[in-house]
Length: 237
Image 1: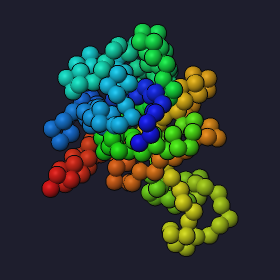
Image 2: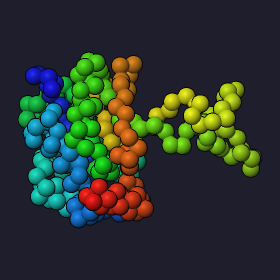
Image 3: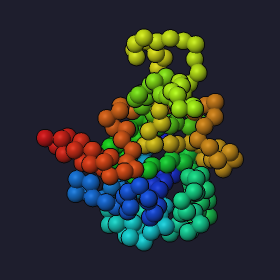
């Protein structure tokens, strides 16, 4: 590990409303509230100290459970930042500007950790930060090898199947297809100034952190929660 770390604000976002799986952020997963896995990973990271990790939620019950798990919940997110169609960037900017105004903390980078990625580990956070530092990157985003490959995806046009991606190339084997990666939602980090100026994690100096598919589960529905339960129980055997 480098002796000098950049300062990072890690924001765990946990909105109370969820239509696919109601109250999912605090539903029990292998006897631990879902949000607890992300809190624990952040707490165990070598790059994040306790005053650098906060939970942003609009929900008092989530806030209380997060505090019981040892998380810092310094504010209740305004209702206007918790509506269904709200993008993540205003939520992150609210948290960033809050710590600047109330804690005089001006982090070099801002990290998004979503509770719906319970299989993400502290080591994933640390490895992503190492890529960030080693490359003097503006951002790092977690991805995993695409399954299935996008060349295998189809669309329906006038009732007929068409390739989702138009290409003249013909691949008879999946192994011959060019490598492709999909965002897994587990980790996003970018220079705070990039977020303030552009409201994005991406520019020409954004790097990937490649995670294995078995840790890339993003929970939106009950069957994914069930799958995560099976994975976590199996990992204890």
